[in-house]
Image 1 (cartoon, rainbow, N blue to C red):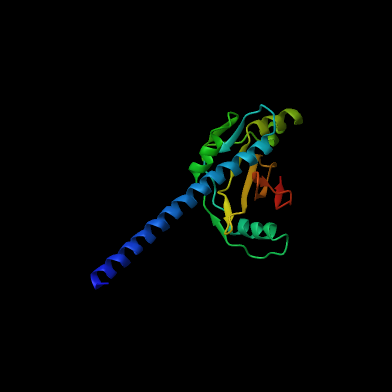
Image 2: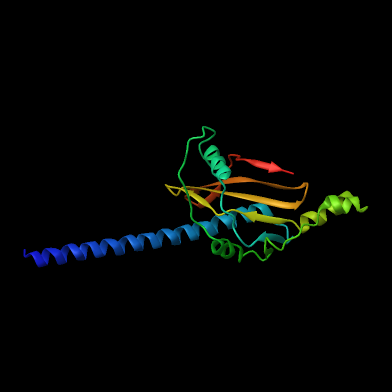
Length: 194
């Protein structure tokens, strides 16, 4: 085999390798996007239940903080704290796409949202029940970008639902890949309530 043929063969193999790597990277991105849609949808369907009540959801996904990642490790390792390498691979467009199928979801700009604080309504003489209902009706759900483990069989996200200064709930949630798709794990992760 001549030197020119060897060089051309090596170049062709290298070119195919680069394009194969790009193709696999594109497929991984598509899989993450599809998985993110499924996870966001499953979480919100469970959270909202069968009620016809509309819900405000922030139109941007927040990036997980170092504390969130620590909580993800704690939850995914069953309390051993074993470190997991998390790949945060979703975007605001994944969130918006996943939420488009929910007719009860109203996407809200986080910077423009204002709570209707039950504490303020009670201070003005409103009943506790009416004040809490007004706060919840105007509350805001914020979701994080979804983080996947390297095996892509575990996913984590954080959420917060805020309806006033002392009105809210949030935490971390784990999903596992099953033969039926992504399913929320029953193992409790971190949570807070206000």
